[in-house]
Image (tube, rainbow, N blue to C red; front, side, top):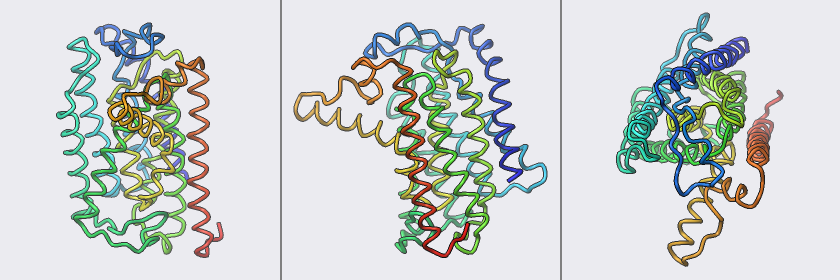
Length: 342
């Protein structure tokens, strides 16, 4: 428990203290956000707001994770997870850098961005099955909860899909001030609690790195919460793809390492809703020539119906919190069903 508090506290402190320094540096260098021309009209005033704030989130997460190991040894699973998160953030950083240097809202082209995400995801998946020896069962709340053995190849395919899907889902969610950072803090709470329970009940969950994964998640809670201090509406800095891709990778990696693969759509329910809204919008327009929403992702739809931006953000945070509570309820119910006592 002490390690979790240290990780979260250090991540929070670093994010709160480092983010304003990053804001100042980005302003000096004239590095600001480019706004989509087809976005909501109310967002044009945000043009020029410093971006690439995900650098602060990643630094805070890494420092929080590292400081928590002053009295504990690192694990290969934890280190592999953190490296994957940083690698995904690097892909996002390249995208952000191209946006600000080219002075347009598009950075890496779609093919290059997907290839970068695939490379990171595949590297993690291969390392996981060959070096980390992850369990390759398709799981819901435990490694053996469904009893379906995917095999190494099947697990690698699943892991790649999860990581690429999660990074893009969080990226879509990052469209309003503080929406992604606030909702992600809730998401990481779920993984912290799950990791803690797996640590206390090793015989049931058989996760050799449960503490390290919980520490990683706690560090990300602190990093997201500290960044939110400066990212809340009206945002003084945006996380950019640096932050959204790093956070998305963290969400997927934690689900895979904690053997809660199929619980991920509930834990990240808000990201799923945002992604589905885009899929539905595109499919409807291409097949029928009609839009279901005024604009996708769905948070923009509610903006255009007249909801103030802060109202949309807070209500979506509530949804994220409810999804976190639901996922932990499912996890705990399964825990009790298998003889758990607390």
